[in-house]
Length: 160
Image (cartoon, rainbow, N blue to C red):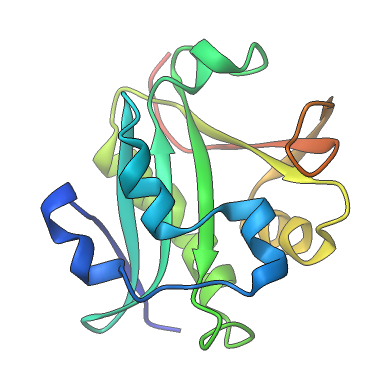
C-alpha cells in the first residue's frame, strides 16, 4: 500500500481535522481535536497520507521519558495513533507502522527507538504494531486510562 507520513504543523489542523475513530476507540487514541487542544510540550503531530489525502494521524512525544520511566531519553513515544473510521480495515495502519522506522530515523536522527503502550484488550492494535516491527518488552504499564497496557518498542536509529 503506497502511503506516506509527514509532519503536521499546528497551523495545518484542516489537513487532519476530518479524521475520526469509532466511538469505542476514542478511549485508546483520543481525537485529533483533543490533540490540537492539549498543546503539550515536546509533542509533534504527523499525518498518514494516501496520496494527498490524510487517512490517519499520530503524535510523537519527544519527552516521553519524562512521563514514563520505562522509556529512555533517546527514545520517542508514539501516542494517539489512529486511522479514520472510514479507512479502517484497508491496511493503512499496518503500512503506516511499517513506514515508521525510516520515517522516524529521518525526522529524529538523534533518537534510537520509539516506545508505546497499548491496552491489553486491544488485540487488533497489538497485532498491527507487532506486525509492523514493534516488539513486546514484556513490561506492563498498569496505569492506562482504559486499563493495563503492554509496553512495545521498535528500534530504528543509530544514536547511542
